[in-house]
Picture 1 (cartoon, rainbow, N blue to C red):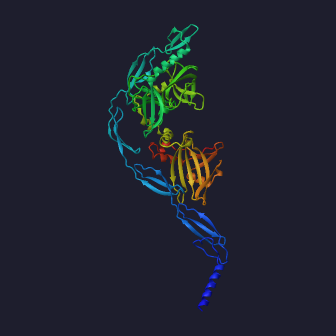
Picture 2 (picture 1 turned 60 degrees about the vertical axis):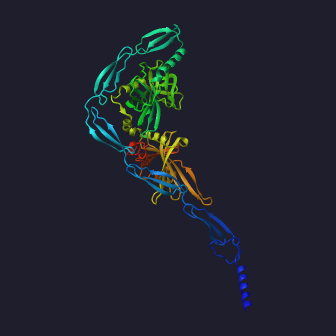
Picture 3 (picture 1 turned 90 degrees about the vertical axis):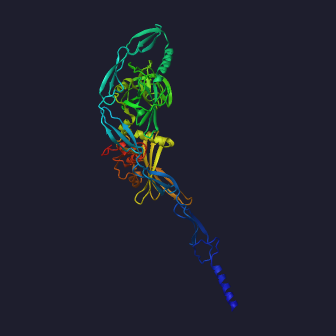
Length: 613
């Protein structure tokens, strides 16, 4: 009986062996075996782990048997650099966010505590017509207030004189003294006649050189000097008599960083300096350095200026300075002229050329066109005639042209100088007065001073808005292109299916409500076999009907838009924006910097009606 039972067990084992499959590999964790006697042949599919999902290998036989093996835990988010969403101010907390470098998900958020007001005190003395006070200004923000008022003194104080009549070699001139705090005239003072200024003209036929005064016409003759020798002698004499009157001017932004370097020169012995307005445009402070050496002078004020004519007259406290006199002679085509300035920062660069046209009008400015080589840094320097007198102030050059340069006429400069105020104003005061006009100018210098230059002359600042249940995620790139001198804002929309739309909008610096838009449509896909994200991109030619309209409308949500045409060459779409929340966002972001700018600085009010063309 026992033998019979053992035989039955052996038979059962043999039956099971023939019925089941022979397995080439180990069976996956979950499986069931068919009873048809075939051998499993497994195909493996690898699913790599992501930041939030586990990875694994799927093994599947064509008979339907499958299982999961080799599980790999999710890799977890890889946090990138912290991005500033909003900087802390004296009254509001700031916020920083960190995003995953793989899937762009928000990883962490930090709240930066608000600062507290720290006030500096400035004592403003009373004048004959203005009460005095103590001004309190926060070091961190623009908050300020005044306190402890003192009545006006009602006593005039003599200020620096204004030349109301230039002296000549035949007639005396007049200086007029006003109260330095109001327009009350105090006294006139006579100015002595000046020495005749002779211009040498070789006369080879008579073998003499004729010397004629450029102011009164008196003349005398001397030995013949060739034009070449006369020009060489004149150039050396002009340089020697001019360099001691030269200064280098550096402008600074509100945070104290240099903005621009230009040239200037004394027009009086007691510290009146002429330069270009664009050298001081947008500056919160200035410094002046003499070519003759010494420390830079930071106490610089403004006597007079004209932005339209690109002329500014500055004031420093000094005496006994060499100065350049204004020429009273008309400038003619073919006259020899000389320029002195800080070409590309190379202080004390002296060049010469001829007058190409003595009577040009450039952007509304009466100018002299000349050929003496100039570069950036020459702005505000003198253009001199063959007697060493001023015929113009170097203002600009045509960059893409061949030596076509311009200087504001000396007579125009004299007109601006003649309007000098009796009380010089502080540079910071002009900054506050002209802030709206200069906001874009200040912004460009701020970006260049505080951010690294990328390829193709680009400077960029980044800001993120994470994706929520109801909104797309956004990445903002605020930028400045130095090569084209354009400000722009780029918005990237990131949807939950990883597709993107990137749109770039140029700033509306002329405030006419017209923008130009570049659009790029990105299509992302997940490569599961290789385990990383890749993408393809297409640059759609306008009109915008080629775009994903849903994404496009999301970019300009709450913004009234109207399409006004296409620039086919640039592949850009003309867009009218009646009120741009995007540009306002850029301005608000700047209010958190030390530029001193705010949204109000950009005067963002635009036309209510879209243009018809």
